[in-house]
Picture 1 (cartoon, rainbow, N blue to C red):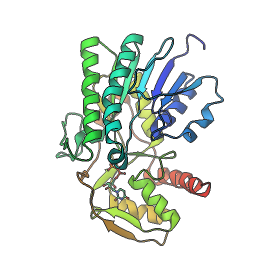
Picture 2 (cartoon, rainbow, N blue to C red):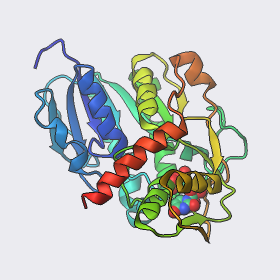
Picture 3 (cartoon, rainbow, N blue to C red):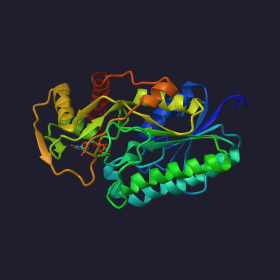
Picture 4 (cartoon, protein in one colour):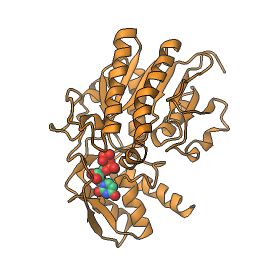
Length: 317
Ligand code: UDP
């Protein structure tokens, strides 16, 4: 590889966000090492990158010692199960990748003097008591609930990253990522968007949990990747929310998807999962001011692209 070329390690490379980040860094001319243990990721998301000279894939679990030969300019830690169904199925791995995995990667960053960015989450705010959520809010998390394994691992991840920053002078970034959607989401990961689109395409009822009055704010993946890229390139070390503030109730969201897909299916109501946050909307003042970033893709545009993607996935299965 060309020595002036930036070399970047992306963990969770075969996942939804990780694979889009690989694409972005390849496009920027970087040398990209994608790492994944494929517990929730899929090779399909990165197959197209294998012919590229500046892409390499390491099949590895980051909770084990991580070794990368040569220099390393950036590390982006995106490995983690990321849906409530996953937390229930693989709670220990969820805890380990956020804690032990982050520790290993911080050690690597310290050794290689790499800039280090973590994928934190709006889940660190738990079921929030303030609205919208700004970075100063400390959150309302149930540590022993079903989401606790993810939320607390991510909170620990922020804590240990800040500790490496203040104690070892490591150059770190913390992205607090709010709900993001787009192509390469897993169809059956239990999340609202793939669930609703999948149900509509298969001709099944649309399952809204609770009365559907809970809210989320959905960010299209290209916007999210742009925000993360800008964060890595700026010199701000405190957490920054990256998400789309356009908030919607889950019932309205289901109705939008019914309209988009033209399905005749109806909404059926199922019990609300434990600790499901009642409302969520990012305050993105900091991202606007510090990164000069705000989302550009409307939900109507983003959902159309995502619907086309899922139609193909289902057709080819
Ligand atoms: N949800 C739903 N039906 C489904 C899947 C999810 O009503 O089939 C609800 C879920 O209870 C939550 C919202 O949609 O209130 C968003 O869920 P998702 O898993 O996408 O994201 P998260 O809760 O992690 O923000």
